[in-house]
Structures are given as structure tokens and as C-alpha cells.
Image 1 (cartoon, rainbow, N blue to C red):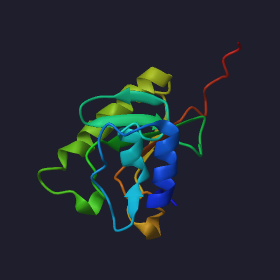
Image 2 (cartoon, helix red, strand yellow):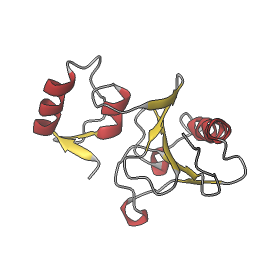
Image 3 (tube, rainbow, N blue to C red):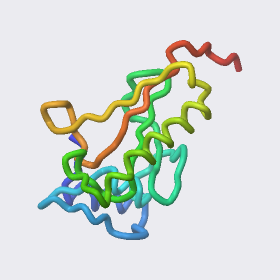
Length: 141
């Protein structure tokens, strides 16, 4: 789960057109779904983007507002961070703060990172779950 094999990627590419650039995170015969989203090879609505991060909705939301904050650079997990890449973590937290403001949930939200299989990590590309909106009233349309 979280990875497509090469045959599935070829089928998706035929549906979505040629990639702008190749993902750099091949793991044997598998590739990272988040890198394909970042490369616009898989469709999703990007909620926020800057030079370092993208934010998009979780495909299986566990809260009224459930976003994924994902570094553009492929970093497998917290365990793969080093002194050169650790700064991405503060950028992720600041993006979460901006998402709370944008979605009107500053009064309460949860940030969560699953690190490793035993903690529930299924996509091996560092990402932060932003969960909130439990107290938000539905907007009448």
C-alpha cells in the first residue's frame, strides 16, 4: 500500500500524460506515490505549495479536515533526517499553522507523523497528517 509497481505507473502515465520529470525515489521495482503526486503524474488537488512542500487532502480522511503535508524532496522517514534535511520539519509545522488558519481550525488540530511500519507508516516518504475541524459547524450552501 502506498507504492505502485512499474506496470501500474505505466498505466497511470497513459491516463495522465507524460511526466514533467522522473521521480527520484525508486525502491527496486516500486516507486513512491507521493513523488508521483508532486511530479503531477497522479491527479490530486494541491491545497498549498511552496518551494519545499506540497499539501493535499488525504484520500482516506480520518477527520473533517485531513491534509497531508509532504516535503518535495524524497525523505523516507524521520529516521532518514540528518543535519542538512532536518530543517524541513519546522517548515512542515509552519505549513500546518497556515493550514489551520486557512481552514479556520486554529482552536484545535492534531499533527501526526507515523515513523516506520510498526507505527503505521504505509507510504515511505516523510509526511505529516494534519487533522482538525471536529468543532467546525457545516457551512450551509
